[in-house]
Amino acid sequence: MIPRNPDTEKLALVMVGLPARGKTFISRKIARYLSWLGYRARVFNVGDYRRALAGPKQRAQFFDPHQAQHYETRLGIAFGALSDMIAWFRAGGEVGIYDATNTERNRRERVYETLRAEGIQVVFVESICEDESVVEANVRDNKLRSPDYADVEPEEAVRDFRERIAYYESTYEPLDDPEKSYVKLIDVGRQFVVNRLEGYLSARLIFFLMNIHPARRPIWLTRHGECRFNVDERIGGDTELSARGSEYAKSLAKLVNEQGQSKDMVVWTSTLKRTLQTAESLHKTPVAWRALDEIDAGVCDSLTYAEIKAQLPDEYAARAQDKFRYRYPRGGSYADVIQRLEPVIVELERQRSPVLMIAHQAVIRALYGYLMGRPQDECPYLPVPLHTVIALTPTAYGYEERRYQLEPHI
Ligand code: F6P
Image 1: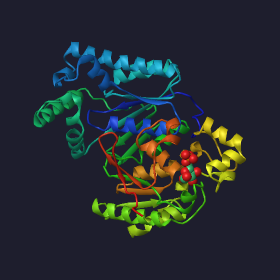
Image 2: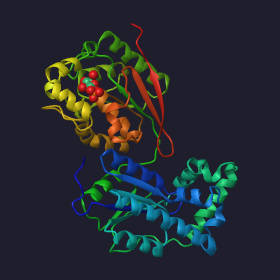
Image 3: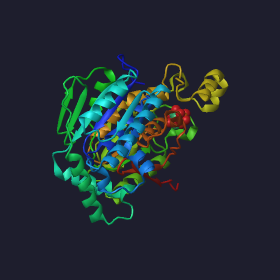
Image 4: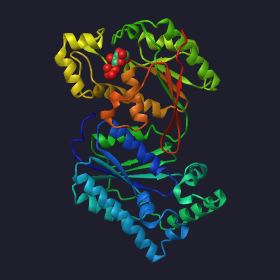
């Protein structure tokens, strides 16, 4: 886990921005990243509250700031969500992300005061798009699929959504209070304005925010082909691929070509022979990351699980007790793997090309856990068999998964 912010235990990120500016995309990415690192982080999306409380199919007029009744209803919903977030903080939440438009100064002030009264540090995160094409793409790619517009003709939905944006624009007051902590993200990464940011975690989040982007590209994960130690059921080591493992390497290259990924795909491996050999048939120069090396089994390296149980029964039992935190003597734990993968994740977010990562069981579990937003304690048990490609295709806020089983026929 990355060190706690020394200034505060509780941090609220309050999103600000017109509709279709990527606030939900940013909120979910941050929550997934922090949860993966071990923080209790959660998004409170006011749109979801609105759909649940006021019905899913509100048209643009509902957002007209001059219609007092609707305005009050929306305000009530927004502060209801904030109360839930505060209750969650009281119950041990650490980083709450308040995902709403918060485009009016008055409302932001009230949100700020409410959170500060609870001793919660507040950072505003405003997303601004000056590039109309980004807004247009966001409306078409994400908003038309929203439950708000189920059963509405696309052109009508776009027209209505634009009207909704115009209502928000009519009362929009961008962040400008020099006393508050805030970040402005302008045109997804083109420009950043950072004001009065304090603390380790906030700085860490800015670094993350500077690397994420909404460009969609597939991410493929696979373990190396079967190696000699897999055949002998030994863990760790640095052995060569078996004949079956080499067969898998060829099938993998064929799949990459067939799926039309070969041209731009970037290949990342660990520094161990079995991943480098698996990459060979792809005829690309892989980037070999030490951070992608398998979990370090320390004194248990090269043993079978049966040998560990017989020779080091206490270690075996301790691992069974808490597989996520258990650290092999002179080796590592799953928690250590996540910590060392953090720069890989930031680089992965930054990349705009498709990426194929060839690594190892524990490492693929940790990467998959991040990408699919799985809780830490599930991570050591996620099924990641040999000779299987996990192809992840981005969707609006996550990934769609397809698995290709390429079991060698020898
Ligand atoms: O058995 C293959 C392997 O990659 C080992 O090198 C590694 O120790 C193990 O899998 C990780 O899986 P688990 O955490 O389930 O022991």
